[in-house]
Image 1 (cartoon, rainbow, N blue to C red):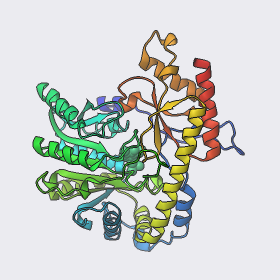
Image 2 (cartoon, rainbow, N blue to C red; image 1 turned 45 degrees about the horizontal axis):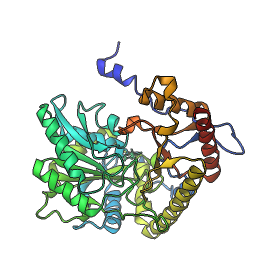
Image 3 (cartoon, protein in one colour; image 1 turned 135 degrees about the vertical axis):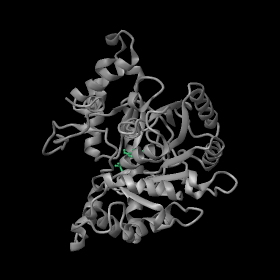
Image 4 (cartoon, helix red, strand yellow; image 1 turned 90 degrees about the vertical axis):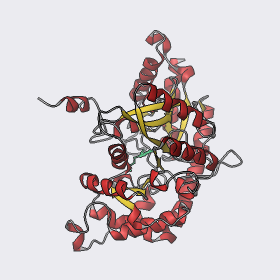
Length: 422
Ligand SMILES: Cc1ncc(COP(=O)(O)O)c(C=O)c1O
């Protein structure tokens, strides 16, 4: 006997337990995963740093300063962000609140912006990071409004027309939009929003009186594409809000999981100039509190900005190389992908030509699910487009920052599956 909501939660499966990961020497039949957005290219670097800095004070084994970010960590993060995000006004450590990962802070933003079960909703362009559908809704009673802003170009200022239409369509159904959530750099498209688009989106949020929440977790995982197209990362905090939007409506999420290959640290933070938003976040982050040990290690890491500069430079070079290799292997395998993008860990593949439509009586989404199962059977995993609200079936998100031998093996397996379906 469990509650109705718990019954819904039983349908949501997340990783739990052993993973059977591919290893060319020790587990050649293991699974190659292109699914998790993890940066394996610098995993050893961060592990080495942590292993040489894990000297813990006895005060870290008690509740200490509390649940939502030690002063040392908040000031180290503020300096880090001031250096790399170039905010118009220096971020004060008091504007920062920590939780156990950006996942939990996304939920916190849902809880703070919307009343539960009351036709209040959050606007998102699609395709978009699939886990928002869980993170923002599972415990919050909030609904999401997905807006079509074009399959692969959400990034021109013209996207505002799409959000405007989505806002009005929701209103006509009696739904009141309370926030717009952006993912910049974008997951899954790997692109950064140009400054002019962010300015227009800020105007839009101001005009509608809604919050702008910018998930900037991939901010410093931006890399060069040879002479290919690339866009620099611009934080919403780097845009002067004067005459555009009240800064108390703009909030940024950042964390250790991506740029520092530190997802296991479970550390994310909210940056907000809105004192009530921050107070409310601190109250509920008590339930999503990071470990004092993680906070200590992150503070040591962020304080050592010489190390951080070297680490990020290495990471960005390796991302660039891994993307080139992925492009080469996918092209050899005859796979099409979204060409733009110079940030994040992924590429957006178009496998529509390979969908086993005959086996699903022409149902494209069922064919996408079937293809996904065929990949799993062949020992290779990718996230399918459906949970990312892809506008049409056949898109898959391919995470390219895994070790070269695993990438080669994984693309070989993908290719074998596609050869059978075509
Ligand atoms: C856009 C985005 N936000 C948040 C997360 C989760 O972050 P965390 O590990 O800090 O919970 C991810 C992970 O894939 C992500 O892609």
